[in-house]
Amino acid sequence: DAKTTQPPSMDCAEGRAANLPCNHSTISGNEYVYWYRQIHSQGPQYIIHGLKNNETNEMASLIITEDRKSSTLILPHATLRDTAVYYCIVRPRYGSGNTGKLIFGQGTTLQVKP
Amino acid sequence: EPEVTQTPSHQVTQMGQEVILRCVPISNHLYFYWYRQILGQKVEFLVSFYNNEISEKSEIFDDQFSVERPDGSNFTLKIRSTKLEDSAMYFCASRRTREGNEQYFGPGTRLTVT
Image (cartoon, rainbow over all chains, first blue to last red; front, top):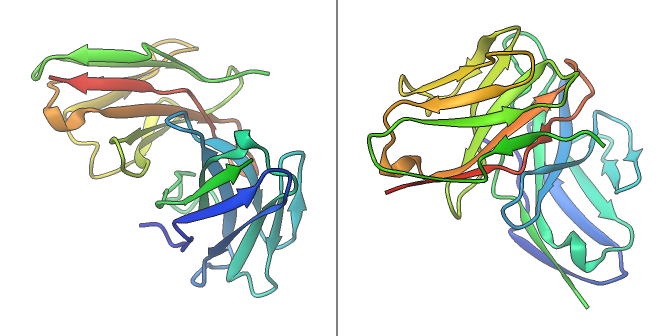
C-alpha cells in the first residue's frame, strides 16, 4: 500500500502558487519521491521526482525536507488546467525485486479557481 | 514529443468473452507496465514486463490475465474470460531505463463488461 499521506483536497486561486504537501515519514534511504497528476480520467502524467535534493523543472518545484519525511510540490503559477488529482508516490530504487512499479494512493484533488 | 498510445479507447464486451487491450509504448523504452483504475477508485498496479518476461505482478493479475510483446512495438494485455468486476480504465506505461526516468502513461482503454 501507499506509504504517503496527502490531504484529500485543496483549493488554489488562479495565478497563485499551489503548495501540495505530502508526508512520507517511513521513507528509506533508497526511495525516491515521485509526483504524478491525473486530469479527469486521463492517464497519469509525470511531474517531478527527487531523492534528497530539491528539484525544479518547467512544470513544478519539489522541496524535500532535510529528514526526507515530507515534501511539498509547488506549482508556481497555477492555471485552471492544473485542476487535477496529484499523487505523491514513494518508489524504491530499481533492483532487489523492485521493478519500478508505482503504488498510487488517493492523492490530493487540487481545484484551481478563477 | 513521443507518447504511449492505446487502442481501443473504449471496449464493450460481454461477460465471459476474451478481450485484448493494445498498447504501443515509446519506441526506445524497455520497461512496460499495465495499471487499472476502477471508476472512482485509485490507480492499481497490475504487471511489469521487461526483457520479454513478467518481472512482477500483483494479486489482481491472476490466471485470467496475460501480457505479451508480440513484436517490437506492441504490448498487449489479454483477459481470457471477462467478469463484471473487470470493468475499469486500463493504462499502459513505459519507461526507458532502470533509474531516474519516469513512466509515461497512455491515455487508457475504458473496458466495460456487461
